[in-house]
Image (cartoon, rainbow over all chains, first blue to last red; front, side, top):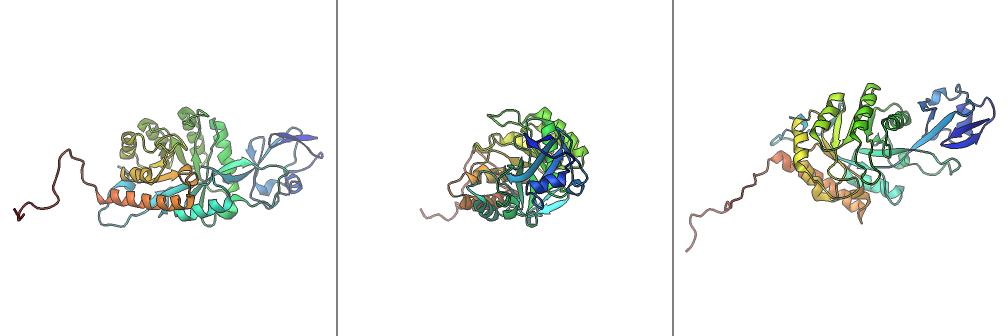
Amino acid sequence: MEIVLNGAPHPLADGENLQQLIVALELAGKAVAVAVNRQVVPASLWPQRVLQPQDKVDVVRAIGGG
Amino acid sequence: MNLNSTPETGQQDTGLTIAGKTYSSRLLVGSGKYRDLEQTRAATEASGAEIITVAIRRVNIGQDPNAPNLLDVVPPSRYTILPNTAGCYTAADAVYTLQLGRELLNGHKLAKLEVLGDERTLFPNMPETLKAAEALVKDGFDVMVYCSDDPIQARILEEIGCVAVMPLASLIGSGMGILNPWNLSLIIEQAKVPVLVDAGVGTASDAAIAMELGCDGVLMNTAIAGAQDPIRMARAMRLAIEAGREAFLAGRIPKRFAASPSSPMAGRVK
């Protein structure tokens, strides 16, 4: 199936959860925050959140800004 | 009258209190526009700032995940990190961005709100700002809000429950300085929450002027990061904020269109 990850299409196996996605992106343990369809999902709930086709996922970090 | 701004002759400055926490530095800095993370770190340290704003942005998928991170050089253990909504043009985007920022910082509630109305001028869209401020306050955020220097807008933001109002002195990144000290004074006079100049500071005297007017603090980014020697300018700003604050507390002489000799007339040789 396909989700939209940070604005771009991203292929994913059916039934994958957020935790698996973050691990696959090599972002586990990094300072990131995640939202699905504009709802923030705390890290503790990533393993339970199974992704659906066309879910819009945002993975963000802090960068320099004024 | 904002209690934070009441001149206290002969006493130590009690510090800047925002949302119940007191800071000894009245200089807040942004973290953008530096050459690299090391310069960010060094300039922030030289500024003496305790509060530093950061932007929230999507990670680049596929980029090196072990690349150094901003929060490694300005860690939340050492600084109060203030997520901002830079680049947001709608209330919805601003609220969403700060919800992500809060999650990133483990539930930290202090946030900087800005909702822009124009890409060229970066002037705030006040109707969207008010909408976002209401939603954020309702969601439990402590909102420090970038706004126009309109005293009525500032008052409405305070009534909504923002913990600080941050009027622009001039356009973001412009270095034009304090263009309307009169509006700033009106805002300071009526506010019961801290008033911080946010946007437009160019050099040390601008920061000092803001503090002399009675501002509780100043937030700046480009003035430091864009200087030819950012570390040196960070130091200059630190001194300027302190000097301006001391001058305000000291109570200046009034301006009079008349001379007043400093030496006595009696006993002059003739």
